[in-house]
Amino acid sequence: MYKKSIFLLSATALFISSCTKKPAELKLEIPYESLTATTSYFNTFKGSDGLSSVDISGQKTRIAMMKEMDAYLKTYTTATLDAEKLKNMFANSNTPFSDATLNTATDKTIIAKTAQSFTATDADAERNTFKSYFDSVAAMSAFAGQTAAQGVPGALGNHLFNAKGFEYSQFIQKGLMGALMLDQICNVYLGAEKQTADNSTIVVDKNYTALAHYWDEAYGYLTSNEYYPMPDPANSTKWLESYLGGYVRQVNGAYGDPEAVYMAFLKGRAAIVNDDDATRLEQIAIIRAALEKAVATVAVSYLNKTKTATDDVSRFHSLSEGTGFVYALRFGYNATINKAKSDELLGKLMNKADGFWSLTNDDLDIVRNEIADAFGISRDAIVNH
Image 1 (tube, rainbow, N blue to C red):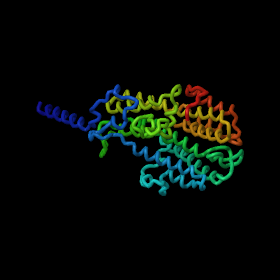
Image 2 (image 1 turned 90 degrees about the vertical axis):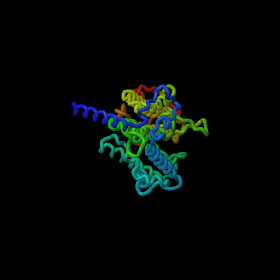
Image 3 (image 1 turned 120 degrees about the vertical axis):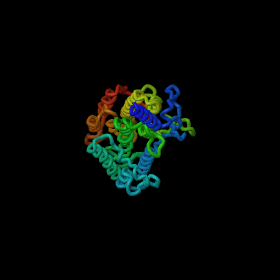
Image 4 (image 1 turned 30 degrees about the vertical axis):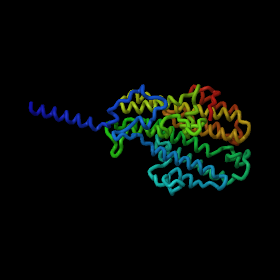
């Protein structure tokens, strides 16, 4: 009897001890009905120290790296682009950034997070695709002083095209919205491995659990703002999102609901606080479906805008953006347009003898219709981008 009492007391003490390790924020249930479209993501979730438990610094760093890369790509008007510099930006090697804090963030790279959910072999293939784009855009920049024409690389307006009408800077930017942002959100941070992380103890020297942090990192690839979408307080006609978050915001009205995406992020994070796995998993499904469909809608929209373009620069610029999004579709969760299908559609757009110069509206319709029908999107969809 004595031994039994000791055992019960020890078990009780162990239970109490294990409970006290649980983060303070996880002991305070967050009523779902208290969450609104303008609830601050950062202020809603706090650690026992009273400070926000949301840390998206890694996502901010990589997006800042992308912005520097984009800015560098635009300097083709004044100097020939250096492919090695672009590859260094991709890998954060040899101090390629003008912002010194990015150079010193040696544990943060774009390349390591590109196509990360793919097998090692397939991920390397996708990363090499971007490296080939860097080589191509640098080669094209040598022709910036001449006017692009069929079979002739050069500039049209403020855009640089190769002899086939391809604008590689758009392939890079739109492609990374899929390979980096969409993949990280839907497949990595909201994927099975991260979503089975510990939610009972605080990460050492932090004020969040591993599961809560992974959820926040997914949010950080959509936006760095306290709610989404967020208008610019200095200009009511503008918004503060960029990259993938900016395009998902534009897919609204009849085609999508960006506020619903935010509410799913907010509710899913609250579900982590509430230890409500069923609700968390429901929000993951909402986010994945909405983001993949948004990318598909934008791809359809760009192809439609290409058809109505009235000059070559508008046509090839729009088509390059759309092509980048067709590529990005392979990074959806259990992608509706997977790698094989994406490659097939890209071939229909890019593999004619004269590239984009050879494409007819009927050619564009074939690709557009396959994407629209696969997602149940109107074939005539046009969104405001």
